[in-house]
Length: 115
Image (cartoon, rainbow, N blue to C red; front, top):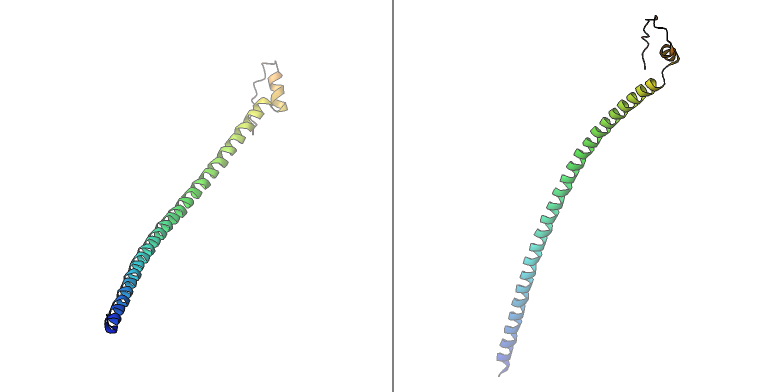
């Protein structure tokens, strides 16, 4: 094999190697673009989940405020009825006298409020 043929064979291998490397680089670029698209899609999905979570959190916060108001109202009602029960269990001094009185001729009515 003469020198010219060797040079042609060598150049052919160089071209094939370069072409092979270009093909590999191209495949790597395609794979990189695919991965980037995947990351962007994942990022969009996560952003949607975060936005949904923010909306849900705001709704739960509003619901919690309403429940706190309702709870305060119920506590107020419970306190009101506890006070009523205490007043019934421990009548005022003038009410005790009225209850202890055996005199049926006294028809006066005590109109003082219980609370």
